[in-house]
Amino acid sequence: MPLIRRASHAGNWYTDNWTELDQQLQEWLSKAEYRHGPARAVIVPHAGYSYSGPTAGHGYRQIDPKNVKRIFILGPSHFVRVNSGCALTKTAQYETPLYNLNIDEEINKRLEATGQFERMSQDTDENEHSIEMQLPYLAKVMENYRNQFTIIPVLVGSINSMEQYKYGDIFAPYLNDPQNLFVISSDFCHWGRRFRYTYFDKSKGEIYKSIEHLDKMGMNIIEELNAYDYEKYLNSYGNTICGRNPIGVLLYAIQKLLNINNGLHLELKFLKYAQSSQCRTMDDSSVSYATASVVIQ
Image (tube, rainbow, N blue to C red):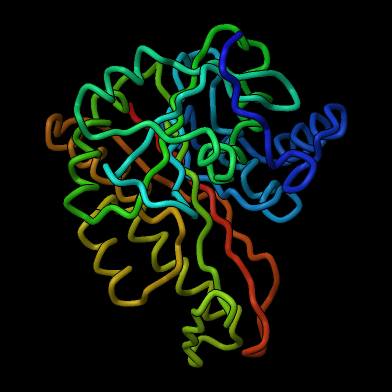
């Protein structure tokens, strides 16, 4: 029997009822417009589906499933320290309420051979939600090709810019392959005292408007594909983007490709932005969600 990672957040962060989940995902995908695809990479949120599901649909709508053979899922570690920087799964399959997704062990072994990856314990794997929240959407988008693709989940630790550059180098050749898809899992600003972050620029209006301005400032920098300016932005404002390190890895991988091929046409575009609630007082809190698509021609 293959070792399977349980869908440990099903029934809590999203419904474990197959029919209900399938209908939800289909509705969110149908409400999103195909306008920046086919995606080679997407940035998508990982909160509970009742909060972030509609926003994520705009990213997943840009995927052309018939061309995808391997899916790299880069999610930030929320709970454990990853000693080597990034970690791979020990399991052979990831469970979803729709159907199980097969791990690409061949790619895992290639990545492990670089000496820059460790294997996470199954407890760590199952406790982390940043990767799991992408799985039902991927299962839905790829349902007509369910036996024709594999996934490579990567847990990204607290890596600095030099380490992001290193992993960008490792992943660049995979990003360059049109049969590969990268899913970058990230929420945006976590605002409020419970998040220990209360940046407020009163010149922008109410608090939620200040948060939106702050997030969109970062989103604009990400669209410019400049990893250095993105780091400066984070250092200057401290925006609590939980997937900032996976996003940094993506930006460095993109820079690597552009340095190798100046004629490459590559565009990253944000498609949707939302907040869990509108903060108006210092006692309020919210989490922001944004989705983007990367197209390479």
